[in-house]
Amino acid sequence: MIKYILDKFFYSLLTLFGVVTVIFFLFNVLPGDPAQMMLGQNENSEQLNIVKKKYGFDKPLSTQYLYYLNDLSPFSLHSLNKDDYSFFDRENYTGLELLKTHNYSVNIKYPYLRTSFVNQGKKVSDIIVETLPNTIILAISAISIAIILGIFLGILSALYKNTFLDIAIQFFSTVGMSVPSFFSAIIFAWIFGFLLKDFTGLEMSGSLYELDDYGESFHLKLKNLLLPSVVLGIRPLAVISQLMRNELLNILNQDYIRTAKAKGLSKFYVIKNHAIKNSLNPVVTAISGWFASLLAGAVFVEFIFGWNGIGKEIVNALNLLDLPVIMGSVIVIAFMFILINIFVDIIYIKLDPRVKLN
Image (cartoon, one colour):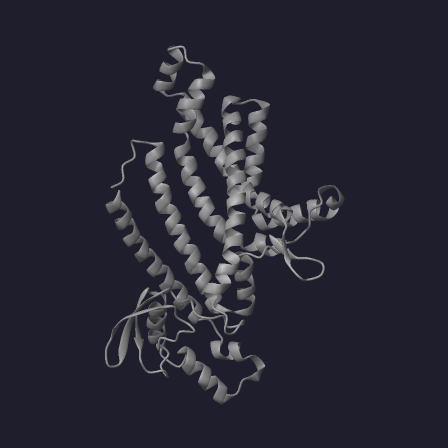
């Protein structure tokens, strides 16, 4: 088990390295000068040179790439010259010095995602800490709705195969998979947050915490979680219900199920203790993939509902070309995707003893 986790973690680091490399060069070939973005309309040649030197924009692209890897690495090399970009500035880096030579020091630190171009002086890590928990709460709520209803509807559809109930569930599942989330978000916000607002009490937009009418304190608004969770959970719900139906129908035709029935076990007992558990493997795979994708796919849903999550922050950063926020958010989401995949591989063993970790 430990060897498998270490091997998986090593290959995950290679994957993460590839993601970092791609997004760095992708966003650095875009038109526009980051120094000009940071200064806005108040720029002059002297200020531009100061900013470029401070953030390493005056260096070749290959050197900037190495600086970026050095910032992300928990073990990093830093210059002792305060005028160099790689100087270990306590305002930017949080860590400890391990070794020191005449010109350089080796440090262990938290990965540094740099600072926002728009919110100058604010670390990208601070922005992510503020917004990511809201996205995780939204994703957990959405996938919980999808799991509970999806498995339940899949079981019903399998047990009542080729009936009106089965056909209706399959129809709505197909519609749910076909409609884009951003379109569903607009429709749900308009119907339940505008047309039926007097009956539902729901708002078209809102976040988990909102300021009171006097602007003095934040209050928890759980009702604002309902609409974005339902919209975000529609597509995984449809996929889970169809996977559960198909796999359960396949399991119910296996020899050991017929043997259990022949021994006099009730249909309810056979389905509950044998069929459902063995039908969950493809469902778990779908859940893991969808949960990770919900973290990234919540972008437009959060933007439409005004949910203060990392998805909304990414949209705002794209509009303003705030590259550090975009790159930092993508890296964090990719890292969480990797952790979820490792976790799901371990869960597989509990569900199916035939699966071995190699």
